[in-house]
Length: 231
Image 1 (cartoon, rainbow, N blue to C red):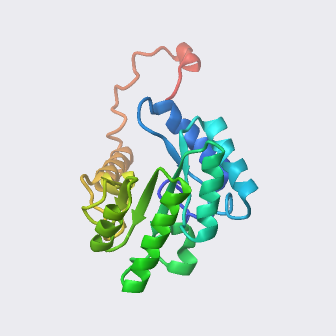
Image 2 (image 1 turned 120 degrees about the vertical axis):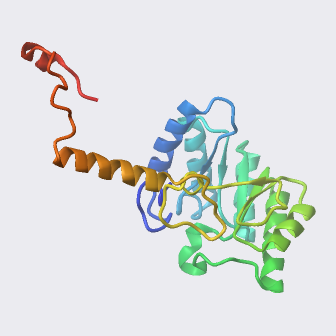
């Protein structure tokens, strides 16, 4: 959301209040699907107490069913354990973790044998800590398969090959709303092009006085204009 909706260059600037605000909007639209909210950068890394407070706020104020946090090193697995023990469902996230962009970049992770073993170890630690599912992002398909076979909880892939239990595709990428997208994404429409063409056509018609048409609104008495509304 930070990047595709709010225009930030990374996911780091978004705040917990902004996440709650947008999660509330999603909650009003979602009636049946499981709704999970990302905990933003520095809303859970400082301490178990901070993580518990942040996750609790999202559940209470946005009406979601669980939270997602990034990373699988021992300290993060303990954070997951703390949240789960408090009754908060947690989804894990390993591989490319966007909140670590300044450390990892946006490169595919787990390409070497050692790096792959580290990601597998993290995934196992998150499952043992009580995570109900795990995101695998931008890793080789063979590693996605290995992790999916090793874990008993669902794996959700985003650029992790076809062998995960489920798949994620960012809506802006799926609909073709962004001029740039990750190499593993696929667009099923070109709404960027459609919207651009529509706006350009509107501009041309306004400049040429084709829009609005000469007779548009001619029937409305001038005395009623002050009571009219504009969408």
